[in-house]
Image 1 (cartoon, helix red, strand yellow):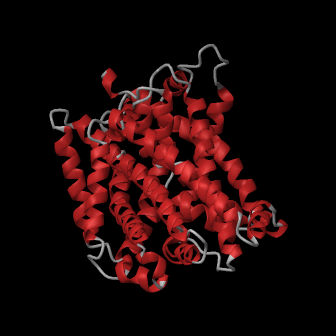
Image 2 (spheres, rainbow, N blue to C red):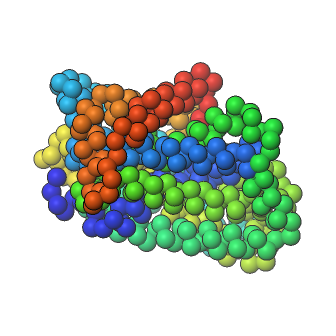
Length: 440
């Protein structure tokens, strides 16, 4: 891979990786999972799984990307060719790649909801509306967010225009602002009456929930997919990473910032719901109905609504950006004579046109469930198996130990954790998702 396709700095790589991981799973998924699974009990398991999955799973995805010097299709092809299976890998990689483009279709719709909310916060419309009726006015009727939808996709494509460089530059702005704005919101929420009850709930383990298998499974699923270990998305981040960087350290740092993002979101959402005695909910109802209702009732609510939706918009665009880049890089790897601009335009159309007919949440919701329950878990499992059971051990370990700068190399313990713990857990999550139709 040419040098200009690498990240300019480790900081750029880290912020881009964090941007890929931070999204709706952090903003509305994590707070709801915490509140519905015993607060502190859920957190204990979540932190354990985040540590495990970042240490081996995320590291492996970065490693195969850097080793193959390319993204999804090329990485699977490389893994299978290392065992002599010429050509099979590129077909195996199609499913994880399909997951990236399919989920981008629905993801762009929800970001258009966020953009609409931001505009209505600026104009003040949101601050005087019945939030339930306001949300239904555009989410339950088709073509109500069409201009926002188009602008979101256009902006995201522009951030991908030169590949690693433009993506890195965009995330160096968006991700720091995401954290700063959410911390600002968390400070304001801390001043609300009874917010302390929310903090107590978040950090106090419920012994009953601590022994509930459902809590463990939910924490495992949230940790797995919060890190975007989908067998596709993080591979391209590794492909743009310098050989001088410590991959495992980078994976740990990505997990740390992703976890901070989730915690800060929880420190905004859960105490606010406790302060106003609102039902602990997640998903669109939390972001577009309950939180705006709360913001209407606090001093300076309009300013804080603007801050909220700007922060969430940055988190959403950074994730969508990764979905587009994954597909773009794979197409360009397969057809190097094509123009990047042409491929991005094609991806934009593939994402936008079907999405137009999913702007009604009655269509958007089932589509996202379909991708999240079936394609993403299967793709993630194919990735885990490919890196630890197909790719030659020597190749994976050589890449993991590249860039350690004199530190003790990783060995049998790291590899066995991946092969005999991480892979079985990814298979277990896939089976649970398919058998019980659970979208983690």
